[in-house]
Image (cartoon, rainbow, N blue to C red; front, side):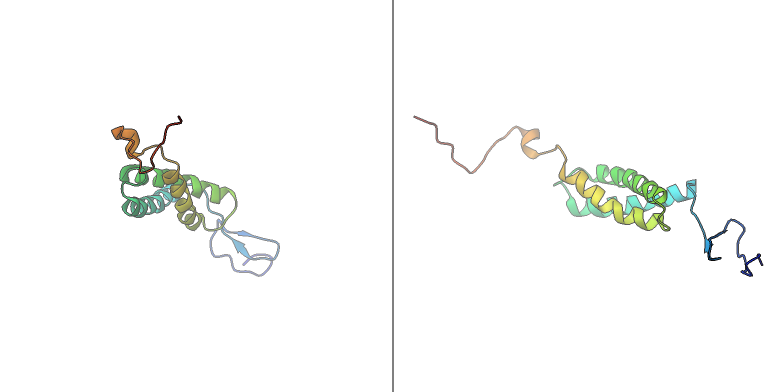
Length: 123
């Protein structure tokens, strides 16, 4: 029991002004592992859905892992209580942006520029 009469359940817990317990997450290897796991799951799903339309499957997996860690650390430093959930939710738009703004097109690789529109030269 503390001076406010509240039972302290764990030593690293911090009591706020109302006497309620706040548990702050700290950046650790375990938390980074879970950020990487969330990112790899999102990268796996996005890579399977997008296929060859966006970046490759491996790139989606790598960017998902990187994005999961980046978004998780941002969520942790913003003070959100559940950084893992924020990491999982924020990596989806991150992967969307990666896939939308990629530089790989079939025309760039093959060099074929067939287009159904007819180009009429000026006379």
